[in-house]
Amino acid sequence: MARTTIDITLPDLTGKRAVLTGGSDGIGLVIARRLAAAGADLVLPVRNRGKGEAAVAEIRARVPHASITLAALDLASLDSVAAFAGTLVTEGRPIDVLVNNAGVMTPPQRRTSADGHELQLATNHLGHVALVGHLLPLLRAGRARVTWQSSVAASSNAVHWDDLDWERSYHPQRAYSSSKIAVGLFALELDRRSAAGGWGITSNVSHPGIAPTNLLAAQPGIGRATESRGIRLIRRLSRWGIAGTPETAALPALLAATSPDAAGGRFYGPSRFGHMSGAPAEQPLYRRFRSTEDAQRIWQLSEQLSGVSFPDGGTSARTGQTALDIVRDPV
Image 1 (cartoon, rainbow, N blue to C red):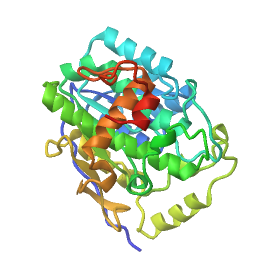
Image 2: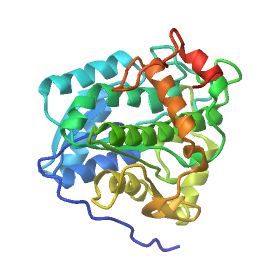
Image 3: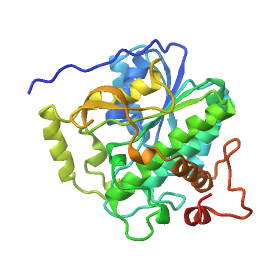
Image 4: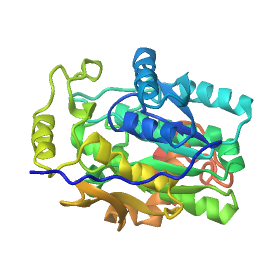
């Protein structure tokens, strides 16, 4: 099947500082290249320095004028998040765009972060929450657009409220869905709280549809010795034009993060074939993103589990209430 060319034009980002997580591979690498080509001063925090250097070299081979700063960041370590953010805060330069793109998908067996949290919850959600919290002064100074990468997986299953860390009966796909629903709920609550508090930040959500990337490839580091059957199917669907490519799957996040027509509190994804592929467009919120009560609940839990508090946020007004209490008895 012949594939129709799909693309968007990014605005001129010259002089804008953009921070992108997960930019050394796959969809993230495409996002990084496009931001750099649009003139952004790109900060690229990576866990693997070698992969980061290879990504920078690849981008500069195609975008010779690219302005890229490589930095160390492991989203599965709250200390690493604090250290990276602390460096940027010390520099004091406002941030105009933050794309929370990095993620881990379906480790076959339950794995934990440096802080003891289930790895997908830690990397996909809590690390990004902590990053936004630590960078909040710079985001406010830049009146930043914050875009959070969710997933089509957030359209099914639910937040695993009774056991967010999946200490009992771990299920790889449900844990992934739970983390990505949490991402969407928190992102939308951030936009509401920014509007109410006059923070000047807009926060929105994107998803890439389905595309062949390394998320489902062999990754011994998370216990996947061989590539999954799912990635082989996705490659075929991509060749047939039903699923997207890394280039097209990057477009919803780019639209959400840079377009003057994109807005806070909105959701962007591919527009064809069950939202698996196609041109990026605004979409109705997934049903699991719509509850403001759930959003407030995940906000409280996220602050407690990440150890980062936001203005007018923090713990419940009930003295001594813990994150576990909020799960059992939400306010």
